[in-house]
Amino acid sequence: MTISRRSLLRTTPIALALIAVPGARNASAAGPRPGNDAGNAAGTVAGPADGTAGDPNTVPFQGRPPLPVAVPTGIGPGWAAEIPAETSQLLLVVGNSPDGDRATASFWTRDASGWRTEGPLPARNGRLGWTPDHHEGDLRSPIGVFTLTDAGGLQPDPGTRLSYDRSDDFAVEGTGFAGEPLAGTFDQVIAIDYNRVPGTSPLDPTRPRGEDLGGGIWLHIDHGGPTHGCVTLPAEALPVLLRALDPAAHPIVVMGDVSTLALGGPAS
Image 1 (cartoon, rainbow, N blue to C red):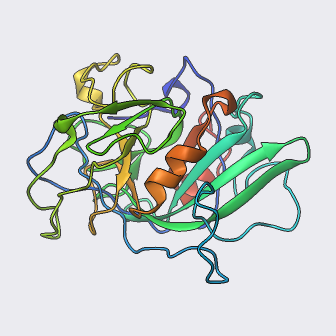
Image 2: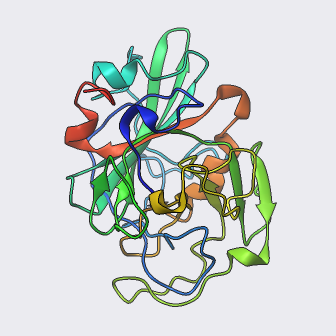
């Protein structure tokens, strides 16, 4: 599951944004092969900083800048140029280091005045960090910008506008890299369109660019340890994020370590 710069998702030009991060990813276990990262995300976030329960239809990210910005914070100019004009929803996942497994996630929306953010939430990524050249089994998460088109899970659709595949095949057992149980990790997942066919179930094993480049890179529920390459978020965040994502907004995820995302972009 590798990502090579501009070759990343040529069919869908995407772009990046940035914010300070810590990151981590999923682990090894018996489970459906397509989501080879059984997921993990360190920490939990209760909700708004004021202690209120918050709007159940709003992504549970904290904080909003007083003024909109032209480009999500920290993104290099080359990455900014990759953001499609039609995209108005962006999940930014920023790892704290190239070889670390902890990250921070923030959710950005764009209107006529610019980008605004809600965040951060703790996230986790691949056990060995990040790579611009992901391959099957390298235990790193691919760096890049990817569309978000399809979702699914062991649990029923929480009300997303994305296509959603409810299947018992999302059941997972076993333990992760830290010995943590993986059960429930795939209750809800969002497929990251890295080396997959958009418009299909996250369980679809098709790898258009070849098996060696990996696949099955998902956003899924944190299990308390690093992943094989997926990105994890706190359990309460997944259903809320699923309800917030709108295909009409052409949502994308921009993900990678902080230093790489701050550079000029995929061609730099």
